[in-house]
Image (cartoon, rainbow, N blue to C red; front, side, top):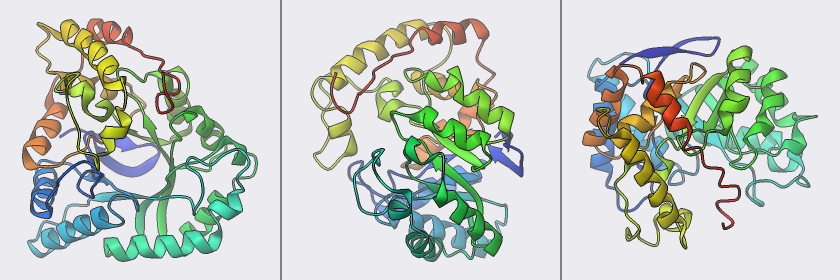
Length: 329
């Protein structure tokens, strides 16, 4: 497993991290024994970064991670594992609108109480990285939640602080990076969603901000395993994400990528991850991992040679400006 600096911070992070949403729920049936086995396998293979959130099973994901780390410590496996979690805004619309008030959605009282829960779930005295789970550009001129988080850093409750970008205004975090408010950003970046390469990623590198890439597989369609007839359980997040004709449209485009990969030696999942890692600003990519086989397949991508420039240029042509994907066509 190759590692990369976590921005300007003293931590060498595995290129492949563990995305822990699915082990918390919302992605179909998942049993805890399989989740624990997946975590152990990924860590045994050199993964040292896990990303979770309050909303991943209402703490279930965090508790499974804590159980895994306790078991490893008891077994004498003492290598540092960096755990990033996220705090959502207090009750209200998601994502926050320009009319929401930062001090209401991320008040100091709320942040302190939520962080206390995160610490309890993870069995920790200090969070390695606390990310705000979404944001609105309207708060950039007076980012009071980050002022609170910087105080909590000084108190020793939080290590690094970061932000997970709002899906349709990812560039809204650029001013936060330039202002020194965040130590990391978590962004959507994949073969379809390439907009971060226009500016966001370069700014992160210039500012020494760690970059965590989520949705590298575009919720699975970039693995090449879906067809237009694929069905998801009603309680599966993807049933909504791919509602209507969205899945069919995405599969058509994914099939075009498959054609470009013929003869390259890359599978679709390998190409999806290697594409993300080809950008020098990226610190780690966090594919969702649900079982040991996925842990093995994803972690192995780090050991593959760098993607050839000619193939990378070809994949740039699959940039898909979907605009408001969640709201319709």
